[in-house]
Length: 214
Ligand SMILES: C[S@@+](CC[C@H](N)C(=O)[O-])C[C@H]1O[C@@H](n2cnc3c(N)ncnc32)[C@H](O)[C@@H]1O
Image (cartoon, rainbow, N blue to C red):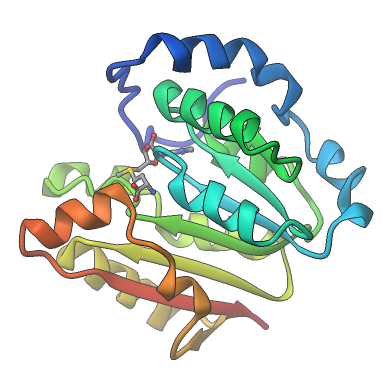
């Protein structure tokens, strides 16, 4: 598929362990390549939640364990993280996680109906250099994409650990009336991710944004 979006990630190979690599052999059992696969399962679950860029998958796995009646769709391009989550699915016998492994914006672009109750994005790649800001995932096009796939009253929860990214998200939200800004969200109280922990250790703050589709 041709990518009409500027890359929002660097395809990091990272260090992939033997067990993560072995787990990837089982990816086909959980991988989703078309939204019709989500629709075919929707009646079996109370809510459908998408986490974009789940990293090592701690949140995705915790949420799926704590809420077995919900379906969690995890999106990531980082193979070690995908392998890690596949291992957790097997070890914990989870039946409510599915995975999307390409650029999530291409997947969302193809959907023309609301299917998600919530979309979560925690610590999107910050692209701190000014010349790279155009690669940041959260922009007005992304807000429109998520708005289109969220159900009415569905939540978009975003958080960044970069003050400058937070400022640009704030501006975007102020200019954009398709979402209502909520003062808080239960997603603010998720366990800190690896990137959030690092940010705090390095003295940065976490800036959460909770929006609701009206
Ligand atoms: C900075 S990491 C944060 C990971 C995790 N949320 C955390 O807080 O630990 C951002 C992740 O988003 C993923 N990512 C970036 N752009 C993406 C895209 N277009 N589609 C899917 N995943 C993407 C990257 O691969 C990366 O693992």
